[in-house]
Image (cartoon, rainbow, N blue to C red; front, side):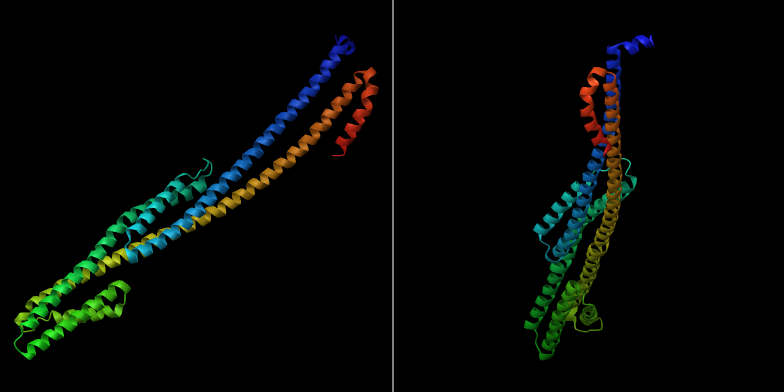
Length: 327
Protein backbone atom coordinates (compact mmCIF):
# COMPACT_ATOMS: atom_id res chain seq x y z
CA UNK A 1 0.00 0.00 0.00
CA UNK A 2 2.82 2.39 0.90
CA UNK A 3 4.50 1.57 -2.37
CA UNK A 4 1.33 2.46 -4.28
CA UNK A 5 1.01 5.75 -2.43
CA UNK A 6 4.67 6.62 -2.91
CA UNK A 7 4.41 5.95 -6.61
CA UNK A 8 1.12 7.80 -7.03
CA UNK A 9 1.60 11.38 -8.21
CA UNK A 10 -1.92 12.35 -7.09
CA UNK A 11 -1.28 11.04 -3.60
CA UNK A 12 1.95 13.04 -3.36
CA UNK A 13 0.15 16.20 -4.49
CA UNK A 14 -2.66 15.60 -2.03
CA UNK A 15 -0.23 14.96 0.81
CA UNK A 16 1.74 18.13 0.03
CA UNK A 17 -1.38 20.29 -0.20
CA UNK A 18 -2.75 18.77 3.00
CA UNK A 19 0.43 19.63 4.90
CA UNK A 20 0.43 23.16 3.51
CA UNK A 21 -3.25 23.69 4.38
CA UNK A 22 -2.76 22.30 7.89
CA UNK A 23 0.18 24.63 8.45
CA UNK A 24 -1.75 27.61 7.12
CA UNK A 25 -4.81 26.70 9.19
CA UNK A 26 -2.76 26.39 12.38
CA UNK A 27 -1.02 29.67 11.61
CA UNK A 28 -4.34 31.40 10.94
CA UNK A 29 -5.82 30.06 14.19
CA UNK A 30 -2.88 31.30 16.27
CA UNK A 31 -2.75 34.68 14.53
CA UNK A 32 -6.49 35.12 14.86
CA UNK A 33 -6.31 34.51 18.62
CA UNK A 34 -3.45 36.98 18.92
CA UNK A 35 -5.30 39.62 16.92
CA UNK A 36 -8.42 39.14 19.03
CA UNK A 37 -6.37 39.76 22.16
CA UNK A 38 -4.84 42.86 20.61
CA UNK A 39 -8.28 44.13 19.61
CA UNK A 40 -9.61 43.46 23.13
CA UNK A 41 -6.65 45.38 24.55
CA UNK A 42 -7.39 48.40 22.36
CA UNK A 43 -11.06 48.26 23.35
CA UNK A 44 -10.11 48.16 27.05
CA UNK A 45 -7.74 51.09 26.59
CA UNK A 46 -10.50 53.13 24.95
CA UNK A 47 -13.07 52.15 27.58
CA UNK A 48 -10.81 52.85 30.57
CA UNK A 49 -9.67 56.16 29.09
CA UNK A 50 -13.27 57.22 28.50
CA UNK A 51 -14.51 56.49 32.00
CA UNK A 52 -11.39 57.99 33.60
CA UNK A 53 -11.95 61.23 31.68
CA UNK A 54 -15.66 61.13 32.56
CA UNK A 55 -14.87 60.82 36.29
CA UNK A 56 -12.42 63.73 36.14
CA UNK A 57 -15.02 65.91 34.41
CA UNK A 58 -17.62 64.95 37.01
CA UNK A 59 -15.19 65.89 39.76
CA UNK A 60 -14.58 69.27 38.10
CA UNK A 61 -18.34 69.86 37.81
CA UNK A 62 -18.84 69.07 41.51
CA UNK A 63 -16.22 71.67 42.45
CA UNK A 64 -18.00 74.23 40.25
CA UNK A 65 -21.33 73.24 41.79
CA UNK A 66 -19.93 73.96 45.26
CA UNK A 67 -19.04 77.45 44.04
CA UNK A 68 -22.57 77.93 42.73
CA UNK A 69 -23.92 76.85 46.13
CA UNK A 70 -21.79 79.55 47.79
CA UNK A 71 -23.20 82.10 45.35
CA UNK A 72 -26.72 80.86 46.11
CA UNK A 73 -26.07 81.31 49.84
CA UNK A 74 -25.44 85.03 49.28
CA UNK A 75 -27.99 85.78 46.59
CA UNK A 76 -30.76 83.19 46.98
CA UNK A 77 -31.24 83.38 43.22
CA UNK A 78 -33.66 80.80 41.86
CA UNK A 79 -31.75 80.85 38.56
CA UNK A 80 -28.55 79.82 40.35
CA UNK A 81 -30.36 77.05 42.21
CA UNK A 82 -31.90 75.78 38.96
CA UNK A 83 -28.42 75.64 37.47
CA UNK A 84 -27.22 73.66 40.50
CA UNK A 85 -30.02 71.11 40.10
CA UNK A 86 -29.40 70.84 36.36
CA UNK A 87 -25.68 70.21 36.88
CA UNK A 88 -26.43 67.64 39.56
CA UNK A 89 -28.78 65.68 37.29
CA UNK A 90 -26.13 65.72 34.55
CA UNK A 91 -23.48 64.45 36.99
CA UNK A 92 -25.76 61.70 38.23
CA UNK A 93 -26.58 60.53 34.69
CA UNK A 94 -22.94 60.50 33.58
CA UNK A 95 -21.82 58.60 36.67
CA UNK A 96 -24.48 55.94 36.09
CA UNK A 97 -23.27 55.51 32.51
CA UNK A 98 -19.69 54.61 33.52
CA UNK A 99 -18.93 51.18 32.02
CA UNK A 100 -16.99 48.68 34.13
CA UNK A 101 -16.36 44.99 33.55
CA UNK A 102 -17.49 42.38 36.06
CA UNK A 103 -13.89 41.51 36.96
CA UNK A 104 -12.95 45.12 37.83
CA UNK A 105 -13.97 44.68 41.45
CA UNK A 106 -11.66 47.28 42.97
CA UNK A 107 -12.79 49.96 40.52
CA UNK A 108 -16.39 48.96 41.18
CA UNK A 109 -15.87 49.59 44.91
CA UNK A 110 -14.69 53.14 44.16
CA UNK A 111 -17.57 53.69 41.74
CA UNK A 112 -20.14 52.44 44.28
CA UNK A 113 -18.72 54.84 46.89
CA UNK A 114 -18.97 57.70 44.39
CA UNK A 115 -22.55 56.77 43.60
CA UNK A 116 -23.45 56.81 47.30
CA UNK A 117 -21.82 60.22 47.69
CA UNK A 118 -23.76 61.62 44.74
CA UNK A 119 -27.00 60.19 46.12
CA UNK A 120 -26.30 61.79 49.51
CA UNK A 121 -25.35 65.03 47.78
CA UNK A 122 -28.75 65.04 46.06
CA UNK A 123 -30.54 64.55 49.38
CA UNK A 124 -28.61 67.48 50.82
CA UNK A 125 -29.59 69.64 47.86
CA UNK A 126 -33.25 68.95 48.67
CA UNK A 127 -32.64 70.20 52.23
CA UNK A 128 -30.48 73.12 51.11
CA UNK A 129 -33.31 75.22 49.65
CA UNK A 130 -35.53 74.64 52.68
CA UNK A 131 -32.82 75.65 55.14
CA UNK A 132 -32.06 78.75 53.11
CA UNK A 133 -35.72 79.73 53.15
CA UNK A 134 -35.92 79.29 56.94
CA UNK A 135 -32.75 81.33 57.44
CA UNK A 136 -33.92 84.08 55.10
CA UNK A 137 -37.39 84.21 56.62
CA UNK A 138 -35.94 84.83 60.07
CA UNK A 139 -33.16 87.25 59.16
CA UNK A 140 -34.80 89.19 56.34
CA UNK A 141 -38.48 89.14 57.32
CA UNK A 142 -39.25 88.31 60.94
CA UNK A 143 -36.46 90.29 62.66
CA UNK A 144 -37.05 93.45 60.55
CA UNK A 145 -40.79 93.24 61.25
CA UNK A 146 -40.24 93.12 65.02
CA UNK A 147 -37.71 95.93 64.80
CA UNK A 148 -40.04 98.18 62.79
CA UNK A 149 -42.97 97.44 65.10
CA UNK A 150 -40.87 98.43 68.12
CA UNK A 151 -39.65 101.60 66.41
CA UNK A 152 -43.17 102.59 65.39
CA UNK A 153 -44.41 101.98 68.92
CA UNK A 154 -41.64 104.16 70.38
CA UNK A 155 -42.26 106.93 67.85
CA UNK A 156 -45.93 106.91 68.85
CA UNK A 157 -44.99 107.20 72.52
CA UNK A 158 -42.60 110.02 71.67
CA UNK A 159 -45.37 112.01 70.02
CA UNK A 160 -47.59 111.68 73.10
CA UNK A 161 -44.86 112.31 75.67
CA UNK A 162 -45.68 115.13 78.10
CA UNK A 163 -42.22 115.93 79.48
CA UNK A 164 -38.60 116.08 78.46
CA UNK A 165 -37.55 113.12 80.63
CA UNK A 166 -39.96 110.78 78.86
CA UNK A 167 -38.75 112.01 75.48
CA UNK A 168 -35.12 111.35 76.46
CA UNK A 169 -35.91 107.82 77.67
CA UNK A 170 -37.80 107.03 74.48
CA UNK A 171 -35.01 108.50 72.33
CA UNK A 172 -32.46 106.39 74.19
CA UNK A 173 -34.53 103.26 73.49
CA UNK A 174 -34.79 104.22 69.84
CA UNK A 175 -31.00 104.47 69.59
CA UNK A 176 -30.59 101.09 71.32
CA UNK A 177 -33.04 99.47 68.90
CA UNK A 178 -31.17 100.89 65.90
CA UNK A 179 -27.85 99.62 67.23
CA UNK A 180 -29.41 96.27 68.13
CA UNK A 181 -30.79 95.63 64.67
CA UNK A 182 -27.61 96.78 62.93
CA UNK A 183 -25.40 94.56 65.09
CA UNK A 184 -27.74 91.59 64.70
CA UNK A 185 -27.71 91.97 60.90
CA UNK A 186 -23.91 92.19 60.82
CA UNK A 187 -23.55 89.13 63.01
CA UNK A 188 -25.93 87.00 60.96
CA UNK A 189 -24.49 88.15 57.63
CA UNK A 190 -20.76 88.25 58.36
CA UNK A 191 -20.39 86.18 61.54
CA UNK A 192 -18.77 89.11 63.36
CA UNK A 193 -18.74 87.62 66.88
CA UNK A 194 -18.00 90.96 68.51
CA UNK A 195 -21.49 92.00 67.41
CA UNK A 196 -23.01 89.04 69.25
CA UNK A 197 -21.97 90.55 72.58
CA UNK A 198 -23.35 93.93 71.52
CA UNK A 199 -26.69 92.33 70.64
CA UNK A 200 -26.93 90.63 74.02
CA UNK A 201 -26.09 93.90 75.78
CA UNK A 202 -28.75 95.82 73.84
CA UNK A 203 -31.39 93.17 74.49
CA UNK A 204 -30.59 93.27 78.20
CA UNK A 205 -31.17 97.04 78.22
CA UNK A 206 -34.44 96.87 76.30
CA UNK A 207 -35.90 94.00 78.32
CA UNK A 208 -34.90 95.44 81.70
CA UNK A 209 -37.50 94.18 84.18
CA UNK A 210 -36.48 96.67 86.85
CA UNK A 211 -37.75 99.58 84.78
CA UNK A 212 -40.78 101.26 86.35
CA UNK A 213 -41.93 102.92 83.15
CA UNK A 214 -45.21 101.15 82.36
CA UNK A 215 -45.50 102.80 78.93
CA UNK A 216 -42.44 100.81 77.76
CA UNK A 217 -43.84 97.43 78.84
CA UNK A 218 -44.99 96.62 75.33
CA UNK A 219 -41.59 97.60 73.98
CA UNK A 220 -40.00 95.19 76.45
CA UNK A 221 -42.22 92.47 74.99
CA UNK A 222 -40.91 93.38 71.54
CA UNK A 223 -37.37 92.97 72.84
CA UNK A 224 -38.16 89.49 74.18
CA UNK A 225 -39.75 88.53 70.88
CA UNK A 226 -36.74 89.90 68.99
CA UNK A 227 -34.40 87.90 71.23
CA UNK A 228 -36.29 84.68 70.49
CA UNK A 229 -36.30 85.35 66.74
CA UNK A 230 -32.61 86.25 66.83
CA UNK A 231 -31.77 82.96 68.59
CA UNK A 232 -33.73 81.07 65.96
CA UNK A 233 -31.95 83.02 63.22
CA UNK A 234 -28.56 82.15 64.69
CA UNK A 235 -29.48 78.47 64.81
CA UNK A 236 -30.92 78.53 61.28
CA UNK A 237 -27.80 80.27 59.98
CA UNK A 238 -25.59 77.73 61.77
CA UNK A 239 -27.58 74.83 60.30
CA UNK A 240 -27.31 76.21 56.77
CA UNK A 241 -23.58 76.92 56.96
CA UNK A 242 -22.94 73.53 58.53
CA UNK A 243 -24.73 71.83 55.65
CA UNK A 244 -22.84 73.79 52.98
CA UNK A 245 -19.38 74.15 54.50
CA UNK A 246 -19.12 70.87 56.39
CA UNK A 247 -21.43 68.18 55.03
CA UNK A 248 -21.59 69.02 51.32
CA UNK A 249 -18.03 70.32 51.13
CA UNK A 250 -16.86 67.14 52.87
CA UNK A 251 -18.70 64.98 50.35
CA UNK A 252 -17.13 66.95 47.49
CA UNK A 253 -13.63 66.48 48.94
CA UNK A 254 -14.25 62.76 49.47
CA UNK A 255 -15.45 62.43 45.87
CA UNK A 256 -12.26 64.15 44.68
CA UNK A 257 -10.17 61.70 46.72
CA UNK A 258 -11.98 58.71 45.22
CA UNK A 259 -11.63 60.19 41.73
CA UNK A 260 -7.86 60.53 42.21
CA UNK A 261 -7.59 56.93 43.38
CA UNK A 262 -9.64 55.70 40.44
CA UNK A 263 -7.49 57.75 38.07
CA UNK A 264 -4.30 56.23 39.48
CA UNK A 265 -5.79 52.77 39.20
CA UNK A 266 -6.83 53.46 35.60
CA UNK A 267 -3.31 54.58 34.70
CA UNK A 268 -1.89 51.39 36.22
CA UNK A 269 -4.37 49.32 34.20
CA UNK A 270 -3.46 51.13 31.01
CA UNK A 271 0.22 50.45 31.59
CA UNK A 272 -0.51 46.77 32.21
CA UNK A 273 -2.64 46.50 29.08
CA UNK A 274 0.08 48.23 27.08
CA UNK A 275 2.71 45.74 28.27
CA UNK A 276 0.46 42.77 27.53
CA UNK A 277 -0.34 44.13 24.07
CA UNK A 278 3.35 44.59 23.30
CA UNK A 279 4.07 41.02 24.41
CA UNK A 280 1.22 39.75 22.24
CA UNK A 281 2.53 41.65 19.21
CA UNK A 282 6.03 40.26 19.73
CA UNK A 283 4.69 36.71 20.02
CA UNK A 284 2.53 37.23 16.94
CA UNK A 285 5.49 38.44 14.89
CA UNK A 286 7.59 35.49 16.11
CA UNK A 287 4.85 32.98 15.28
CA UNK A 288 4.30 34.63 11.90
CA UNK A 289 7.99 34.32 11.02
CA UNK A 290 8.07 30.70 12.14
CA UNK A 291 4.93 29.97 10.15
CA UNK A 292 6.42 31.49 7.02
CA UNK A 293 9.58 29.40 7.41
CA UNK A 294 7.51 26.26 7.94
CA UNK A 295 5.41 26.95 4.85
CA UNK A 296 8.62 27.56 2.94
CA UNK A 297 9.94 24.22 4.05
CA UNK A 298 6.73 22.50 2.95
CA UNK A 299 6.93 24.34 -0.36
CA UNK A 300 10.47 23.07 -0.79
CA UNK A 301 9.43 19.50 -0.01
CA UNK A 302 6.48 19.75 -2.39
CA UNK A 303 8.80 20.82 -5.19
CA UNK A 304 10.89 17.69 -4.60
CA UNK A 305 7.78 15.57 -5.04
CA UNK A 306 7.66 16.78 -8.64
CA UNK A 307 11.09 16.21 -10.21
CA UNK A 308 10.11 17.61 -13.64
CA UNK A 309 9.00 20.87 -12.02
CA UNK A 310 11.79 21.10 -9.44
CA UNK A 311 14.22 22.87 -11.70
CA UNK A 312 11.60 25.42 -12.74
CA UNK A 313 10.60 26.29 -9.20
CA UNK A 314 13.97 25.93 -7.49
CA UNK A 315 15.20 29.42 -8.38
CA UNK A 316 11.97 31.06 -7.20
CA UNK A 317 11.93 29.16 -3.92
CA UNK A 318 15.58 29.90 -3.17
CA UNK A 319 14.79 33.58 -3.49
CA UNK A 320 11.74 33.33 -1.20
CA UNK A 321 13.39 31.06 1.34
CA UNK A 322 16.49 33.23 1.57
CA UNK A 323 14.23 36.21 2.34
CA UNK A 324 12.39 34.23 5.05
CA UNK A 325 15.66 33.14 6.63
CA UNK A 326 16.81 36.75 6.72
CA UNK A 327 13.97 37.46 9.25
